Length: 385
Figure 1 (spheres, rainbow, N blue to C red):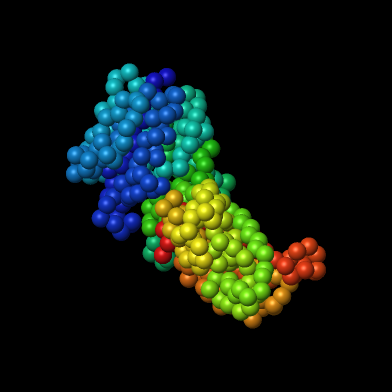
Figure 2: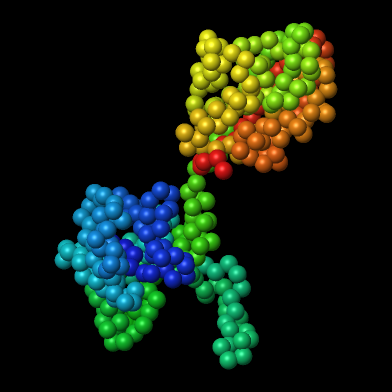
């Protein structure tokens, strides 16, 4: 079996409402089309590819299609989808005896679907992947606008691509189209020609990108997973120094001893951000051996940390911090600290958690000799708004 693939990418995608055809829009950092090209280019059963583009996009074919390992030809499409498929199939070499036809607007097809379609072609000559209807299906009377009948879900299957055909079966389907048959896919033409078309198991994830909402969902699906980091900081307390957390004075006369201002909240969150981004720690970026950071406000270091994380391609999503302090009470200052943190992080205050605990008289913190903070930060791909 020598398999050739026709990837149909010649449509205009009017329902997307963009000047660029939907199959050429960005999805995960490359044109949507390239997801299909890569899938078939890497499949061991596939020998050659043909991509059908809008005729006015042929000059940009190399950029839109991307590099391939297998032979890949690019041809211009026709007015109708079936015209584009005929053009694509005609560009396959004579040695191809099985043709897979795939809509470029379905970027999430996978190897398992391909294998099932090829098995269906081997058994019946033509195969279409499909998923069973999950909802009750009503047929509407066009004249009255009312339900004319309810169809059995057991008999309703939703067709997908790639659809597969032996070369002779596809030729018969094309001949049906030349006799004036209009169809939304090649399986429909084969049916009209009286040829059997096997239904094989599709995949609910193999969705077609048609509307802006579809594209947004696809982009969300490919978005990198959130990353989580933890941070911790502790400083000894001494008389005659202020305790400042995120720029808010909590105590004017008993505060931390440290190279910078000893802001345990900001320092813990900085380390959490760096940990989530795999960007080292606070000591690497703001070492206590560098006089630049002598007495540096914690909020300033936090803002710099956000910039470093942004340079790595991430932005803060949420943070949560627990301060362990025996006295004074932190409750009167919590809202002000959260607001300052939110401003430095570039997030809404609702994305900043801050809690205060005591150590119940246990160890140096419990004796009032030190203050500590624990933080968790969640970052996501993107830039700070």
